[in-house]
Length: 367
Image (cartoon, rainbow, N blue to C red):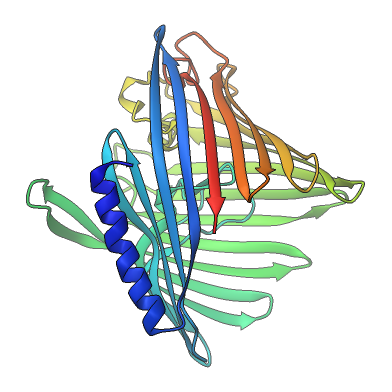
């Protein structure tokens, strides 16, 4: 841990101890170390990241609660602090409202959600930074099966990196209505984004239910173009999942889905899907593409599991594979070993240049 991180950690620790002493505030969190080796162009690069996650458990009142959850990260690129939760939630008779930095995701169980408030909020069962936004959120329960959620997210743009001067560009708004019809989970979403110069308005529909032993889900997204030179965008998703429990503590889970979208939208998705800004280097034909996402998970016992995530482009038969092993070691220490491997060497979407081979190790301790 470097000197800068030690100073920040000590400062935060003093504040947290002061809060704990003055009120019934409890502290929890996680400390961990991530190490990654990336192999690219016959060269290897090593990255080490130290993580400190802090959660404050603040006593609730009858009508209000406060959530504080932040993360401190340190690596060779510097030290930064990210708040995932810093909001107050107040309940009323017919609705509740929350203000501040909070998680917003309209998930319905898919591995990739094209109808989410922010694309990439959750991908392959992993929460991303796009999930945590500064917003006002109102939830109105209609009955125990139905509800309406309204989100307002102010959009700010940095116009001077040195002075950190911000420019207000408008407010991204969204509304989601969700209900159950004959045991099928149905949701209708609408989003207006002032920062999107091509398609400001998006409508999404998702449906999820059971078909015998299989789980069936689908989604449709329609984005209206604001320019005559750009076509409207349609995205379609269809997925299945299946789970089976063996000997009480062993579980097999299978999930797969196909997403049909245009080349323009695929380029927009590339940065989020590949975790790298390579969209300018992609040479895609102007046609519809089919993405395949899959997950195979096996719980060996209550302490360990193996997973295999798959993300592929059916058009050029290129795939990225992510095998993962998790184990809870003695002393409440969690070990995660994973890797990312591209199966194509050509100029395909998931080639080894866009998705270089990597091996990742993570050790974390929860307190």
